Length: 205
Image (cartoon, rainbow, N blue to C red; front, side, top):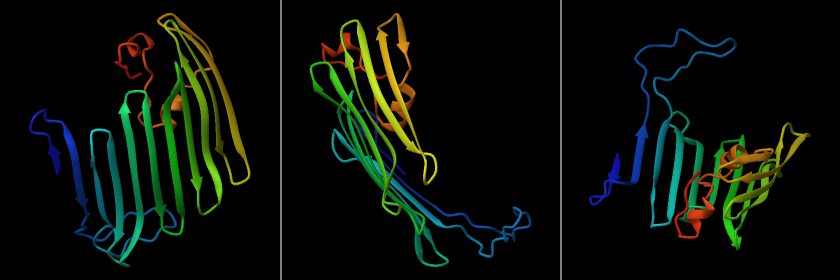
């Protein structure tokens, strides 16, 4: 179900509930995997919506009706007062397998400077799985980005990448491009046009 605003038609909330039923036994399986014995899947539920002009929330739930137990659960929130300013926080859990917190943000802090960060932490392993920290500066005709990205490759190894980029707006970019990495790590990230920022209108990338 979707709930739309009567004045502008914009979606402000949605709710979903689903379960699959099987009408015959399973005859095709993967090697080494036993065929299913039940006639229905787990129960899935999802909800998302706005709780104000700047806040939004979303949650998901997977429940096994066979063993009467939650299998997966996630909940998250986003605060975005304007383009170029966003804060995300979420928690997700898979029974006996995964418990993670995830925090990310893009936030102006002085003049044309904006801070960038993400921290994805495993509560079961007591270690950081992925992190990002950086800053970008937007001037009238050029932009500078400095970003460090670190993520776990295995339980014992990590990979660290550094990005440094100078962009001459509307002309060219020099250096390693961090934009794809930043967008993947910070949900809601937008690159503002410094010329429009002076008039208060940020333009997403």
